[in-house]
Length: 230
Image (cartoon, rainbow, N blue to C red):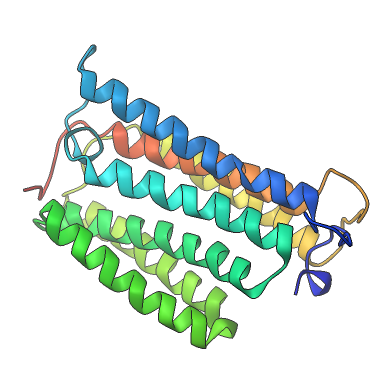
């Protein structure tokens, strides 16, 4: 429970951890930004790169939906400190990790939108079952998903199927996440901790994570050619 890990003091009324609650909504803001960019891209008012994020609606919609679940789920968790909130919070993280994983699979082999959607749903239903019945393994499982996604990212480079893209966005995403994780560590270990303050390390983790999510979207959207795409 948060009183055993996160620094912010627990209030007697909801939201139980206000800074961590409201900062979670940064992910929802990024989801809305992505949807707005999708509308702009679909209008074709200006030339856009031809890739999955601009030509196949399922990809940006799934990614934006995953971010929305993360934002609302995390806010629910920190507002209530309930198991259901924790489930929604972690499940949203799984949705993002599996999206990145399948996006890289689609780079390396043909995957039609319907197949991508069906695979995405099936994997996350299985992950939801594990999360519900074996919640103690949630962080380890998330780590495995991220490791697999990064492995496929490297494999795409090695096989030469990686589309040309603005790698600065990816570098920013990785750098921001590294900084966010360092702050998260200082918060969870209470090395830097002021329980009554509105400036919380975990809240900063939320905001930086949302910014990194936008940079990842910008990286995918900047791809200049499509590979292994149906």
